[in-house]
Image (cartoon, rainbow, N blue to C red; front, top):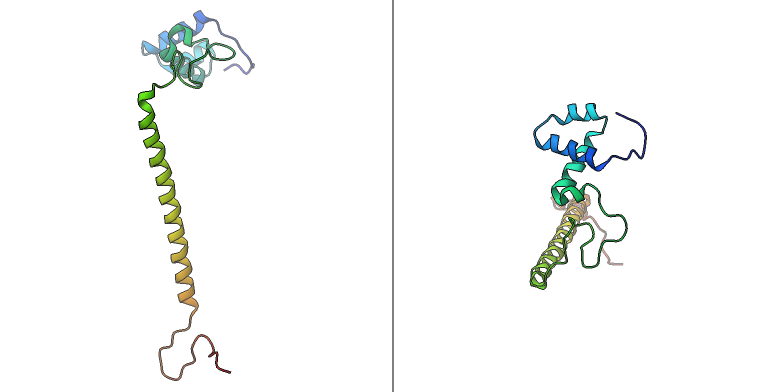
Length: 137
């Protein structure tokens, strides 16, 4: 593999590599032959599947208005019909977090109770002093 940084590949080079991968060629052998990292080949294939030939060379700069950042190319904002469903998913996630916090609190208090019960002396027989002294003066 080449150790040089910022190597720039042509559209034709990337497209031929992706097409060879899609035809079933061994990725490790292709990587060695082309002197390209395997992770780059997999990334190119993913970009090609998401955006076609134009996906191999993503746009530089700000995305066009109305697109979702981090989504596949050409994706637009979700329609308003998904808004109630998204709100429900957010509420479910919030309640699951709350349940998790309550479970953590319960586990903490159970452990504290076990520790307190373990440190108290048992009043098994008559005449044995209690764990605490009487408050009488």
